[in-house]
Length: 576
Image 1: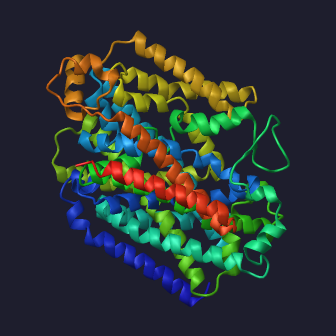
Image 2: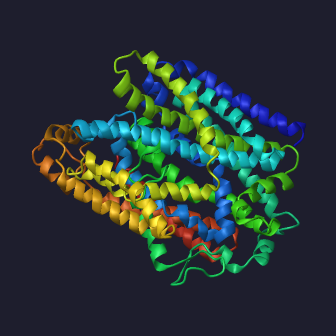
């Protein structure tokens, strides 16, 4: 790192802070402005913010870890979530915008009734806003610590002090600017982060040690470049991403709809729901989410994958626990002066966009759904904005301590999926089946934590754990649903009038509300979903085919993507 590199990094920080100052007055108006940008985000800003948030400092390192362990196909650990993401686009984006609520957990008290609804709202506010949010920020901090150690040689015993300094900066600008500042900064940070990732991939790939795509292919086994896992009845084939039939079904057929995971919640949720609810209208909400899904799964991964594959050649002796740091070593060893500073700034951008969103999103739950709902109910808006800023700073401090307990990034991903196993179907059906009640959600959230230690005791490993967790959790919540009282009709009527989701599972209610025009066209939505999934994977694998010189496959994927785009564009043109 030379003087020019540091100048670039410092300039980036000044620019980011300038955006925060610019939006300070606007965010101070009320909680609606602070947490939802006044519900006035255009689709491209909302979509870019979703993409930037999921591009954290941990993401390239985790992808490198997956690629070096299982080849390109190892990314199916997260690629499978595209099925659920596209479901959110066409079935749920408009419903979230229509709900008119501030946070996802506020949904509990417009959909359910009585003390169970009240308890669920408070419980989910703390569970998501504190417990899950702190784990997410912890693994992002872990990745940032890895980058700082690899790039600057900072000792492990000291690196958390530097991470703490980064978090103070992020927390301050997040607290000052509210969601408007976070979103605008996200857009700026995303372009820096993507540009840096692409530049690194080009430089490393064309280095003398690699020799371009042809050189890379000659230096690694063929199976490393397979886009799809090897489906077999044995558990391992010497390093290729080989799955038993059961494991394949878990990845492709179950995880995306049955497991809760931040940024890929079945039915939408978390910061994705926050951005959907912040959009100008239902159409902007849908387009923002569609843009996010395409960019997240189909556009972003290849620069990281290329560098990850190169690290197999460049740093073959890294231990299994430290494969991800190969990405940082590639930055350190191959980037010239100036570009090195740009890429370090890009990683700061990726880190800050995620942490800023997590702080704003987590604080919205803690303040809107716990503090304001249960502790201080009738204070002025200025009071809640000030408390939100204080809570943002406190969340930041606690997350640094959580970082101490996280050793492997992709391991944290798996743990989160297991914690939410079986919850996904409830989150989907609560919109479309009147009989789901608050106890359904509560039991689905608690059961995995009871079952998890038992199946781990018997040595069952991920993803097979999901079969047990999902099956038991589903049996529990369905039983609880039928053994407990349904939501009272007054609440159900109010919800249906406001959301009018439609569908046969609301017939008991819709028959009593003949004047409410409910949603229809579920067949077209289903077609859009299927075509959307094909579109995302066509762009993803078409891009990969072009990179690796498979021109015939590239044109097939290109034709598929064009046809899918035409179908979706035609169907969406009917939306008013």
